[in-house]
Length: 75
Image: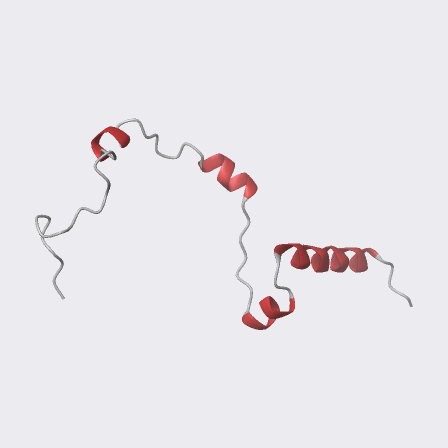
């Protein structure tokens, strides 16, 4: 499978978007620290995602597990 040459590709950007100007002022990694601090993604298996369809429901279930782990074990 061959890729299209640069001349053959269709530019779908609007004329008012000049990438030459837009890419000049960009700063690589500007938000990387904020991203690392506030993001923790976990891929759920399909059966778990079905049981806990929202992030809120997952968080509530995990908080319950944490509380249960803190209870003293009965001997």
